[in-house]
Length: 222
Ligand SMILES: Nc1nc2c(ncn2[C@@H]2O[C@H](COP(=O)(O)OP(=O)(O)OP(=O)(O)O)[C@@H](O)[C@H]2O)c(=O)[nH]1
Image (cartoon, rainbow, N blue to C red):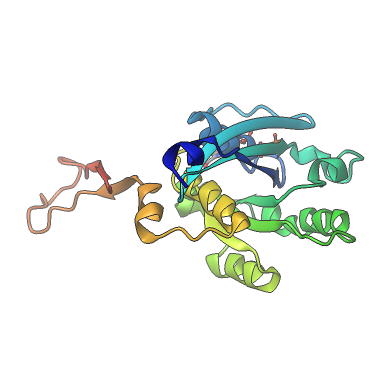
């Protein structure tokens, strides 16, 4: 197939539904991914928000991701089933500093299972621990997260909508998994472009740190 023919191939569309308790950061994740922004102010999602983002997967495959950001208050409501229906991917989001938000994912997952009970194809489900910038306040242990993934065959993700850490990677991996595309190491690293790193001056540290506080810097991994 020539290049021009490849360019003309229509986009694949994937419906991804983001579920989880209120304030876990679903809207923040969606806006970080789709608009590359982050708002500190909490604004509750009433019902549903909707985002579109086009990404390119290996093989020059254009994929448009429809991200359905479902308000945390919709659990138990009439509309939830309709939002979930037809999703190829589900993101179950919790806040790593909020144990209850992790426990409640059971209910969210039950809603997903109910909608797909009679369906031949099952959506890919991703477990997403958000707010890893607050690692020092973590209450949900990583092994609990991993166990939940293994028991249910979820893919596993840790992200921060605030810093953007691993957000693009998360959506890219989910899209690739749904389409059965394998990402190689270089492609995975490419989406991890910005990595935070502390500068450590071994042997040159002043005795009192208060005089010269530790610095941090960004480095690019290409
Ligand atoms: N520190 C930190 N705060 C975050 C992060 N993601 C979201 N927040 C904050 O958490 C609060 C809730 O974020 P939202 O994205 O509105 O949460 P939501 O899950 O969409 O909430 P509902 O609309 O009620 O379902 C906001 O104040 C965000 O700024 C993160 O990665 N780190």
